[in-house]
Image (cartoon, rainbow, N blue to C red; front, side, top):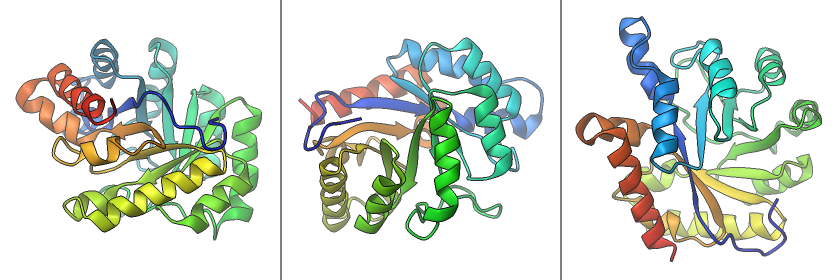
Amino acid sequence: MSTKGQQPAALRLGVNIDHVATIRNARGGDHPCPLRAAHMAAAAGADGITAHLREDRRHMTDADIARLVAEIDLPLNLEIAATGEMLDIALRNRPHAACIVPERRVERTTEGGLDAAGQRNSLQPFVARLADAGIRVSLFVAPDARQIEAAAALGVPVIELHTGPYAHSDGSVDELDRLAQTARFAASLGLEVHAGHGLTFANVSPVAALPNIAELNIGHFLIGEAVFTGLETAILTMRRLMQAARP
């Protein structure tokens, strides 16, 4: 956990490999393999791997998660909904971290942040079970002070800010300022701040420059770009942009 007011010295990159599994599942079979993508991401300099196990298993599967935990050296950040089934899976696999996200079956991707303020009572035992198992818990939330206060009250060490509104606004100054202010507030409460959703080569630099953000989690864009340039090149380019923004 970051200490109060501390600014992280380096910005980490977590690579989300969900959509390698999406491509695999479009035809069935084993190719392309998410585990292979995780190894390639590690070789390209990723600091961690993120994978979202959805209730409908539309991309990652239970077997994918078990293999990632067993076979990769990088920390695995498992994104899950706050359900009994997902709690059991997390406790069985013991990933480095679990990020609690909202989930609706009809959505194509995660459309908003978790309502930690409104669901605090139901989230408390879920967070406690994960933490007791030694799993680092984070909440994927909108850049909103109420959600940050709720996260701090729940005792999680990390929050991940939903950057979708910023990305979908073509880099709005107002949305960027909202991210900056919320990240600063979260850091002042002792929370480590991550961010992600919708980040691309074109819009990542302003977010990467925010000093209170310790990690960016990026997936869909990198996997899509890999179709044209290869995964290693896509990751290396993203890292260069991040490092240039955070001297």
